[in-house]
Length: 249
Ligand code: PGA
Image (cartoon, rainbow, N blue to C red):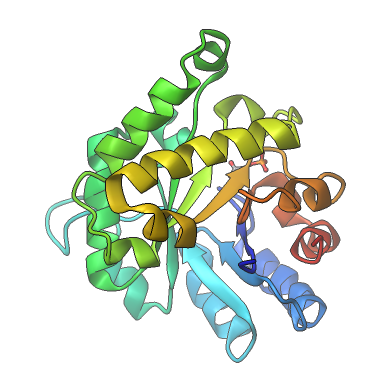
């Protein structure tokens, strides 16, 4: 059995001052965790959170990065800027970025490649909308997101990739996928990765579940054989809830 990767996705929440106290609260509570603990924070919190987590077992992530190293891309942040700032993980292709900021499978691929080249560990998000699930298109959508979003990612690079399966209808809605739904769908994703990279790479790949995971449902979700961790939004903003998820299995 792999350990799990439990990543908080703070989204656009927490001022640097608030980030400092949340991380200070988390540190002792997760110090003995057997799972990997990551907090993916807003850019403006990175310096504070990197300093505050120094010497602890909390890893720091960002929530996006550009695919170029530098240049005329106003408002963007490059992978090497994140590396220099002490960031280890970066969320790529979150459904909110796909829905509100024009992210496509092609830009997801470009950002993922650039993140890997800089030595970051991308947490690449995939997932179907409610319409797609109800229309029986879940597998088709996921297969497309995986085949296009990973088209140029090598088998060796996959060792540094984390995938987050996040059904869009379950994000921030309180409507969690059932354990069976999440397990089955992640199993399907792993099958697609196995077709692309072979079974060994697919088995070693961490595929998280995300979408209204909380302190109440985490133990059951994380007990499922295909689920290698969680990407947690709302519940990661409250220390005791996030800690309960980190320790849920
Ligand atoms: P949620 O968000 O836990 O608030 O549903 C998950 C995510 O968007 O990563």
